[in-house]
Amino acid sequence: MQQSDAQVVLWCTRAAEQDYPSACLRLGHAYNFGHFGLDKSFTFAASYYERAVKGGDTDGMGCFAECLLRGEGVDASEAKAMYWYSRNCGGDISAEMWFSGGSYYHHIPPRRPDRALYWLGQAVSLGHVCA
Image (cartoon, rainbow, N blue to C red; front, top):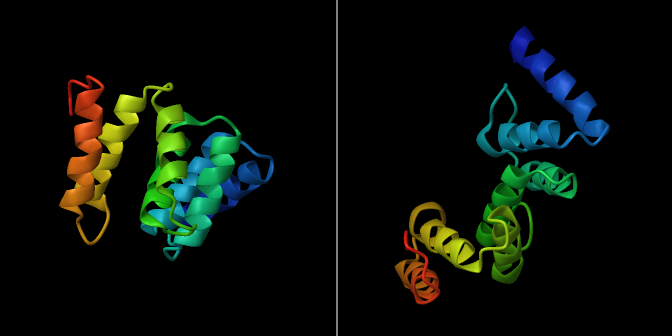
């Protein structure tokens, strides 16, 4: 880990310890993608995303929902993922269904076109124009 990376991790960790949502989100990303010299850890990523969510960070809501949908770092739960997608989208249930469809098609290995089509179909039935 380079000195500048170590400083980022140090200051983000200190801020996260004081429950600053943006710091929790940044550490979640760092662990999720292995940034700043940190080893990837879906468990730590999900934990920091959840802390960001508790602080009201809307980006964290979408990231935490992805963890729940994929079962990375937390037990998989489509229902909980939908809840956090909904909160991330300001309560628009059709948008959360659209996000879930995209996640099943693009993000969750192995790709699940059947689940993607199901959720995209649900979004279409509710009038989501992007779906």
